[in-house]
Image (cartoon, rainbow, N blue to C red; front, side, top):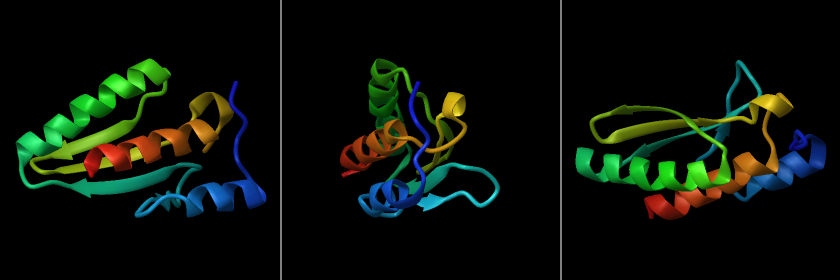
Length: 96
C-alpha cells in the first residue's frame, strides 16, 4: 500500500506540479485541462487511461467537449500519495 504524503514531502511533491491544486473538501489534487477540441481531449483521456491501467491507479475525471477535469487521490491510503504525483506528472507530459 502507498503511504499518504504529509508535511514537507507533500509540499515538495506538489511543488513539482504545474496547475494542480489541492481539493478543499477532501485529500486529493485536481487540475483542469483545456484542449483545442473534443478530439484532442478524448485522445488525452485515451492515452492517460492506458497508462493509468498499467499503473493500476485510476483517475476520477469529467469531460465536456474540450475540457477534462481530473482528480487524483489514492483511496486505500486515504489521500494523496506519490502514485498520484507520478500520474499527475505523466498527464502533464501527455497534455503537452
